Length: 410
Image (cartoon, rainbow, N blue to C red; front, side):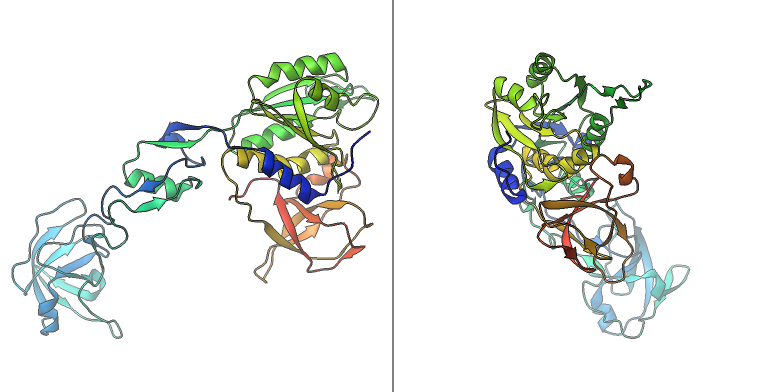
């Protein structure tokens, strides 16, 4: 018999309590994208490291400008990556490019759009309404950060900006969280391989492929996929084969309380501690979660295909984040574009499509399947919203937590 059912909130709390981060590893900067930073990044020199020109134009000494000087002689040129140009007299200027070091003897830059040039002479016109002051269009050395400042905190996701910061500060290698190794086992006598021709009482396996795709979209290596019939001994053999090489095991099927739902007993016999079994939710009520001491975390998801993809998005993705050291959980919310009626009972995970909105909020349209086996109903949906199951009607504009099928950031 299945134990008393937990609430979704309690199940999430137990996952947080029982999942710890994997040990970090060192990778090259090239391999670091999307990983979780296991160190802080600090500036190895002042940023910017020199007085940086911010506009293509002409660098001048502001003293001449404030004395009314508007005509200058071009005495040199300084492009990005070069130094050496100098202004010695107020009547001189240096042609400069964006990103160049500010020439010696100058303290501001006047954009090329303000200039009429003839040979080595330029006449500069100040556009109406623009305040001219020393330092104009100059990004001063160290004005962003001093040497030794922390630029990125440990635990941050290495998105393109963070990778660029690491490169700027000379980090050839980075300490990051290790990517979890995932193995997936599908169980069921009715399942046949995708390339097979099923009999009228068989179905092609889809759950393990859906879970594998979900893992890949999380940035993981493709999981090891395997299947086993509804046979206690064969399931046990499959479990024991996967335990030693995995950080996370995901099972689908055989997790309820039917005559051939062997998985919970097999996992207990293989050394797994059951943390919970059964959640007050639909779909996916028989959800099993447990762990092995000094071994992998495991999820037992029901065999119904919608239960599988919902279970991954609501629970397994969270676990993958925790294994990588991401403990923050800022929920995404969405508004219903139309009312939705249901029978009050368990928490309801309702598939939805994102709709265009002029309100600034994410708006979603309900796309309820016929049942948790109606896999084709998911086509074109973007994720699901979580309804607490306490009301008969959720009105248009109701705001609920939204969980995308595909990871959309932390």
